[in-house]
Amino acid sequence: MADDSIAFDLLATVETPVRSCHAGEVIFNEGDPAQESYVIQKGQVEIRRNGRLLDTLSEKSIFGEMALIDHAPRAATAVAATDVVLVPVAEKQFLFLVGQNVMRVLARRLRSANGPT
Image (cartoon, rainbow, N blue to C red; front, side, top):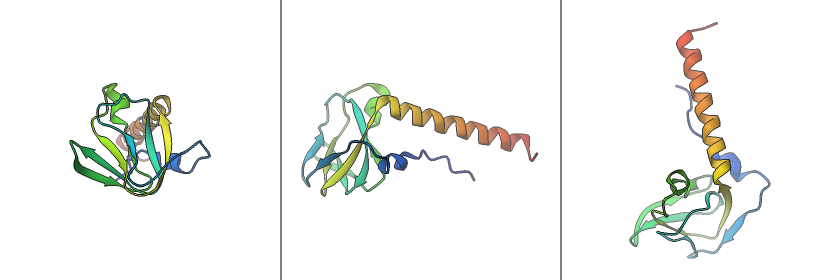
């Protein structure tokens, strides 16, 4: 089966400005407006809602993207579980990557449906 995952981890390796946070530092709070999502280049981030731990994310994971999609306030709080280095991903970059991935998936499915050439 083809890999349909989006290669957000590529953003963690590009030469772009990064944001560093110390362990325990709040990256964003539930209810905040969203300007960007983040890819973890180094370290771990906890996602919390109403003080309850929902998930711990590791390197090459993306978070904060939901608010970019629906333009609603942040649904959870993100806290640096360790010292972290984050790559900010603007809405335009995020939507471009998602669009590129969707086009690749559709092309693979169409080729598969047409059979071998």
